[in-house]
Amino acid sequence: MRTRLSLSLTVVALAALPGCAGDVAPQEAAVAVQTDTQPSEQDKAWMRTIHQGNLAEVQAGRLAQGKGTTKRIKSIGEMLVKDHTRLDVKVTQAATQLGVELPTSPSAHQRAEVARLRSSTGQDFDQDFLSGMVKAHTEALAATKVEVSHGSSQTVKALAKTAQQSLQEHLGVLRQAQGG
Image (cartoon, rainbow, N blue to C red):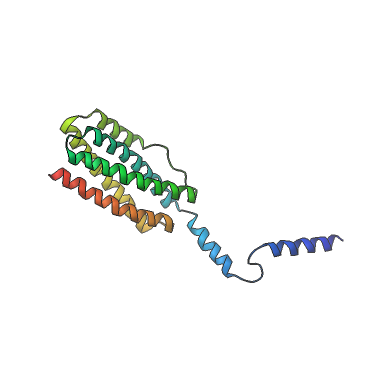
């Protein structure tokens, strides 16, 4: 009786498992899908870094919209708020999908930079804003290029490629504003 029950449970268990009838392809497909749901430490670190950068740049952009002394600075602030908010929505969606926990605020250094901008006024604000944003975008772009080259999750790498294009555009606009 015990052998018959064990044999019956084994048959039921094997019948319930997909791919147990000798069909290997579904298991390979499942492994391929599962691989992308397991981001590497590189992928996770980039997602955290870019998320914090997005949060800080949205704050700085809002400050520029309100405190900038020229239409150009205010316009750059608006661009940063719009683009980094849009990018951060994608980053947080991907993080949720991939099970990556993101920080809830910018880094301590980023918070200090935003506080410094809050206390700056007039043309000093404009110059501080531009130099801070050039530095932040240069660092974010470098980290993003590393992710594109060395990341393992196709989802995160695709997101990094999108971010790279936007960061390069922003850096060009910021540098042009600094020079003229």
